[in-house]
Image 1 (cartoon, protein in one colour):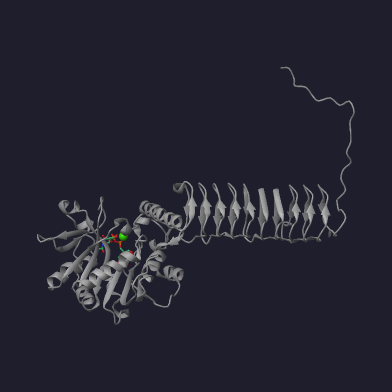
Image 2 (cartoon, protein in one colour):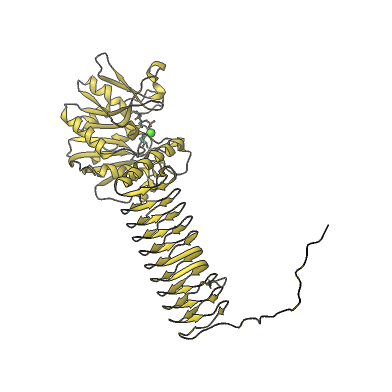
Length: 466
Ligand code: UD1
Ligand code: CA
């Protein structure tokens, strides 16, 4: 990562009070997730990288929900905007919390693709000139919905016109406002005092500080973004998925640059919260979700789903496996069609084969559970071999009970272990057993088997003619 300068004399304001009507959601817009992380968290993460003096977040709609979600970072102050009367009105609410800074950087809570590098360049450009207001702009192919940058005959920024207020001619302008501004603190609140709301939406528009500053004889500057996709705002769910696709492409590229091989990258989902080691191979169709962490040299794939899964180094996850809230030790193998449910903790070199489900259980080093088995609420030692079709019967219809299996146990195929029950270290259980009592170590334990009969002269039926 490029290291950025620190900005101890910069105040950030994040505008996040709107409901986001166009999302049609019971959730406030900024809590909608982009690749597993709420939009507000993406934006806060980005502005934190500038190490500003302080960050004010303006909330209004469902502010309690937003606050609870974010928590209380040390340099963050919450500002309430009771009625959402516009972006200018939102910034105005921050007046009392801003102290002793040169500039105020205003960003929106609904632009998760923004990069800190871009914000840093905006602040640098703002400070290099003598502007009191600097707006971050972009050239876009489809300017619909954005404020258009109006320039005078000299090419200087004259005003920003919102979509709903724009004339047909103005609507054809493809230079738009990102909604991001860097403003001298000493002028900002004077400008905001003069804002009016006689426009199509009856709102106090922040962009109107541009003509106000010009009228006061101040200099207004515009800085163009290099990559206009960074300013994409999320106003509806179509934009949410567009932004998510773009962020996904970015995240995939970042991991590729750090030593991860990703096959068919357009088919995988790797959330922003996931961590990958070097020499990891991700095959087609994988979903890596939440706090998933994958150690060096792991191979995941195809179509595996990992949700909050922690994998040590050199783990192989074969096709169509599902791992959720589970830990896997180094060198282990899962699947194909393996399922680890919450609380499964596997030691090193454990093999979990096809159609095996493991839940809330510890399986220690070198044990093998290779075929068609259910292990639930179990503590299993090391170097056990669990035969095909073994079932820990952990549930009596009301309560769950544990099964304890010592080291070096061999369980024959099609065995039922009726919990609570213990199998001592070194025990062997014969195939087809139903185990209800402690199995002692040594020797062979098996439950009675029905006799095997032979019917001499028996003929196979033949198929009827009609
Ligand atoms: C806004 C800008 C537009 C710019 C675009 C870039 C205004 C009037 N328009 O339009 O020039 O091109 O962003 O994405 O500024 N908010 C509040 N309180 C309010 C109103 C809004 O906190 O009273 C917050 C919203 O929660 C949102 C942000 O401000 O995070 C922007 O509001 P939104 O309604 O999305 O504005 P746009 O129509 O996208
Ligand atoms: Ca917006």
